[in-house]
Length: 253
Image (cartoon, rainbow, N blue to C red):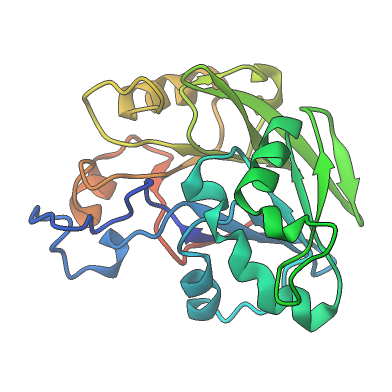
């Protein structure tokens, strides 16, 4: 299987509008971050998208992606769902509804934000989704086993997702399903900044504690803000086995 980072930034993205900091002004493409999302390609070639934010259209075009088989949504915040309308060309191309798997609460929010996609009489150009409610129990799509991981985004219960020995977690501030994070080859986890505590997101000392607790072979940080620092400097200073993800990075697992 393969995972590609389509975006590794926070809800504001990097650069941030109007910001003059060294990260936002950096010429290094690894310091430019779309909103967080990944594309997983299964062993059978199925395309699994995790989260669909406001940069979805650009992410697909830049990565020469033209097909998605299933969408997994971690939670209902705009930077993770608001790009769903841009699925229309993919839906029109196949003539099939797009399967979307998420918590029931999240599915209800998707209906609220895109009511025209669920109307009894739909506008001819509207997208069409098949919503599937999931919990933190394993399920299978085609031949791929997907294991949702319960985490918390401040007080909001949300999901990460585990495939084989790789787990993808974004927007978390605590982990509920700790057993699922043992014996991992790769842990991908949000890290919004290095120092100042955040009520809804891990910061670097939190991730170091996760590394010590779960001992994955590798950790990649995502959902990174411009406060974290320049890629070339910060990557060299991270603990052994820990890396900053960047847009376009691919991982085989």
